[in-house]
Amino acid sequence: MNQSPNRQPLVRRLTARAVTTLARFLHIEAVSGAVLLIAAAAAFIWANSPFAAGYHALWHTTLSFGSGAWNFSHPLHFWINDVLMTIFFLVAGMEIRREIHEGALSEFRQALLPLAAAAGGVIAPAVIYFGLNSDPLRYHGWAVPTATDIAFAVGVLALLGRAIPANVRVFLLALAIIDDIIAVLIIAFFYSSGLDYRGVLIVGVGILLVLGLRMAGSGSAYAYVIPGALVWSGLLITGVHPTLAGVLLGLMTPVTSAQQNGLSGRLREVVRRIARKLSGEAPSVKADASRLADPVSQLRLAQRERLPPVVRVQMALHPWVAYAIMPLFALANAGVSVAGVDLSGDAAWRVMSGVALALMLGKPIGVIGVSWIMVKLGWCRLPGGLSWDGIVLIGLLAGIGFTMSIFIAMLAFADDSLLAAAKLGVLLGSLGASLLGLLWAAVYIRRLKAQAGGLGTAAHLQE
Image (cartoon, rainbow, N blue to C red; front, side, top):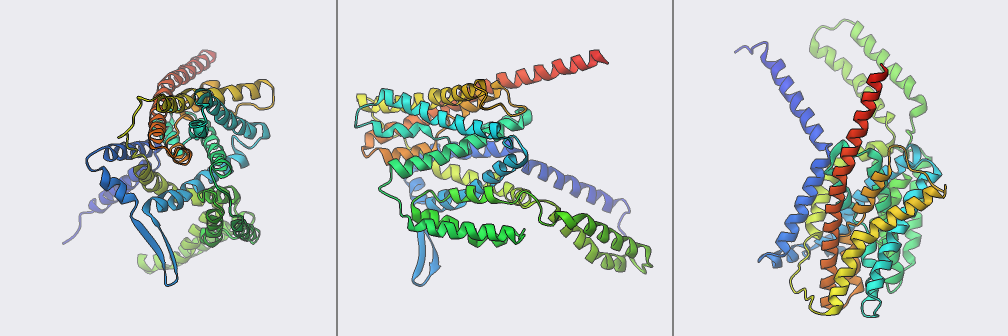
């Protein structure tokens, strides 16, 4: 039975359209942010439902890796927070690396600004909390509202889509990563019994291997798996949060292609080979396609090598991070039970109020205030495309604490009632910061559109 001559082209057109739609879906961050927040809401509802016991039992399920005498066994919660999240931090570190190389953080004054803003966003919340909780029983929680949850803050920002300038996202990401590093250092120095410095040697070996591979011009991501695992293992042994290995590796990822110098010549040679084969006699389409297979493969390889490793790896990991790792992370960590919270006592009420107010007010005050001081003194300047309206939005979203804040609270409070109050404060403060950020974003977007419309009218009048 003969196939209709128009049937095959139609199928191809429909297939191409479906593939294009899927690719566009995978790269819309607003969708990934919505998935993230849905997972967080589902976790919270599940943890406060009659099925809460099953929720907590799931994440405490032990998974083992290894055989014989060597066996690496940890709960599912560990594999998500400490292993999979390293990939997220790797992608985040790569984005910061690109911005440092050729983006908003490429100049010293611009790179200094998120560092100073993050410091202000740590100090101001701590001061507010300590002002309400100076009692020795409660002041240990001063660091609870100092952390920003990268995942949820960027997720809320992603819901706003492309209406928000890209530099706002980059600045928030840089600030949140610096904030997380500060939080980890706080945990290490104030909430740890001590660090095991034997792991530092392993970290050093891993970093040296990475630098050696870079000097050798290795562009394969697989070559860096073992050195990366060494860095991760060393940080775990040391007692520092091992996900920081992702940041370190991301910041060390090459931003230029090792084959850049000879790439143009290789592309010309491949094109010449294809032209020679096309100009020769082709007894059949099948034979012609067979002769072209090798040069076309070489062309694809040359195109791949044209992209620097920091771009290739980030593009490959982005869908996995956005649609698998981050929703799973939210589902495992946002399930905070509010059962048993007793606010009748003055201590619990002050802890909850101190945490919530420090997140909603302290974070934006610290971020915006220090940024304004640094710029007015001439020590920093705002990146291109980032206005003070954008800084206000960043300051508000920085008040989303969630996971890291809850983790610090569990280290800070041994009393169950104070711990429950601190967790409730984190939830209320983070929710309040999210709502304030979204409300301000509506104002910010309207101003951006009005500004764009004004510029368009002015250009029209000049014509």
